[in-house]
Length: 204
Ligand SMILES: [Zn+2]
Image (tube, rainbow, N blue to C red; front, side, top):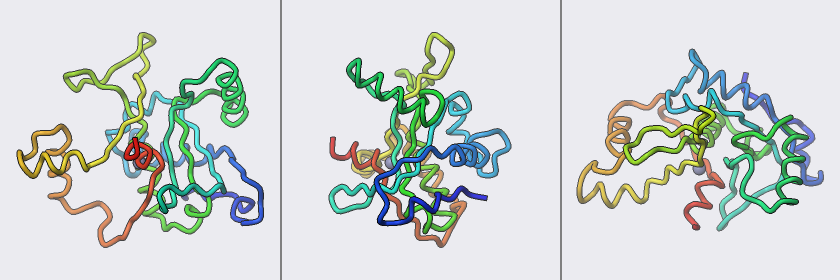
């Protein structure tokens, strides 16, 4: 069963709230990440070694007239000393630790989304939870042996112009063509999601 947000977040009159949602992470691992997951995706393999935190929120988040319904961030962004300590305290309060990535989801959108849209949204955010690569495309690791986690973009705009002129020369384009040449796992669905991480990258 997919996770659903708590009722308390669906009441429009309530105050701004963020609630830790370990059920989203448990579901995402069982659905996309773990070996034998029902919709297993090898692209998320490094996340088997990541600590992930998820939040439901009732705070609406609009950018350029579009409602953002999901976002993926570094667990601990660069901050000054007290900011960092304050932020850490908040994260530990929610998750019991400082996660490698924090995923935030709009509770009202998720309550109304169908199962495929919800799955696409969660997996979209997981795709941002990436691992750094070296110049040869090999995944990077820290000295501790943990993957070097990094926010990964997957905007296509940059690819399209190059592909139109030169073919599939950019990394990822061949894979994209191969993926589109096969029927999708879910067809005939109108899945439309807007993500804060993508919007922020576009604006940058
Ligand atoms: Zn995105």
